[in-house]
Length: 220
Ligand SMILES: C[S@@+](CC[C@H](N)C(=O)[O-])C[C@H]1O[C@@H](n2cnc3c(N)ncnc32)[C@H](O)[C@@H]1O
Image 1 (spheres, protein in one colour):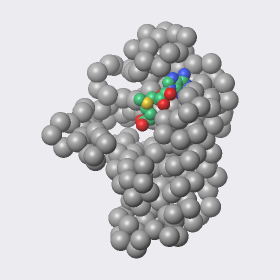
Image 2 (cartoon, rainbow, N blue to C red; image 1 turned 45 degrees about the horizontal axis):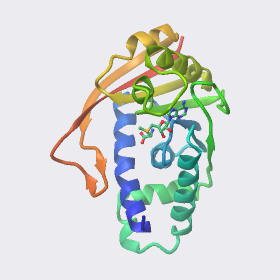
Image 3 (cartoon, rainbow, N blue to C red; image 1 turned 135 degrees about the horizontal axis):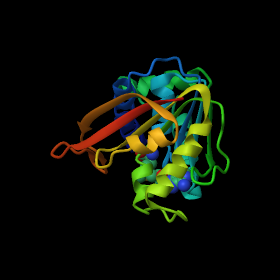
């Protein structure tokens, strides 16, 4: 990907994450945020931008995804000074540069929400988007899938947030996660439904919208 493509994708991802957070009604400030199942890391960098967090952590079980996320961050960081001024006019990208200038701690590492391997336990917010439904469907070669895997993941995710912290779970609206959340002793503070065009290789898909559900949860 060319650096301009990276910035275009980041701008769209920031829009999505901003919508997820605004819909959840989550009160800021958030100092520490972890993105569990972060994939290529754009959602992690978007959380940094929208929340102005001091520490952001992207975790994924796929080491290739983590390598890509690190490379993307380095590429965006190193172009921060050389990028053409018109790019700064994009509010989202300007927000990313502003967040970077506050010198946050940004890290990506391999970790597993089904085994608990290398997960934190002190986060103000844990964001988990489009991870549990695919795990349920057995899409990522995890050793378990189905309802049991969702339950195990939620029990483990609940341990990654500090006692006053929150979990924000965002999924396509095809499955009801409330019974799993209740069983994991996670209080649903707010449930929000909305739709948006997904991000494709050529930008946002405008002809077809996907319906999402976001659950903001606190510990019991
Ligand atoms: C559909 S992608 C979503 C990526 C990102 N959250 C987003 O919304 O763009 C699902 C991600 O979950 C990760 N994943 C699957 N099982 C996992 C596990 N047990 N622990 C951590 N990450 C996992 C996959 O490697 C993949 O990167």
